[in-house]
Length: 214
Image (cartoon, rainbow, N blue to C red):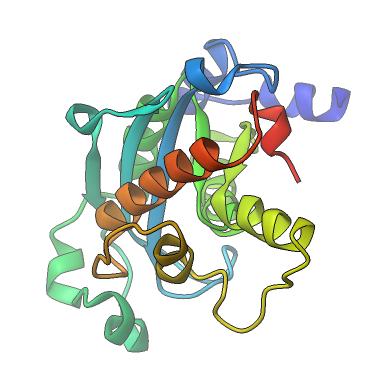
């Protein structure tokens, strides 16, 4: 705990500003919780080896989605390679983007004073952490809310153990009768995650962010 605190004190720039805001506690009630749904498209799954290509985010204020605060940014500096067949981003498109440092700065500004909402948080949090260490001198730490983990825990409690693609975003959304969106666009997937979260908390017996933890 103290080690992380000391590392946070070394943060510079946008990360230092991010840490200056009051962190969202786990005791926050669902109806009052400020979150930012975040999705990324990357060249691979390993934060230390692969690159961020795009980031999309959508604020969730309690039980409402705020599209006025949504954002999308392309990140320059990477060759998309074979990952293009998944996210449909080309080298020319990515070349029009901003630097990774600027993209993460925009994300941190949007995320300030919020918990981060993802579908499989391990991916986004690891890439943001690696980028923060590179550009702002300290690790990334934020309260995470993960619709993937929420659904897995719910299925296990119901005695239905997920298999194969049962926990993919589109498959989970279909179980909550949410519309089908085209996958692998960071902004669309962030919105899809936000909608799924609201459907989950409306269905499950939860009252605080802590009650969603796994």
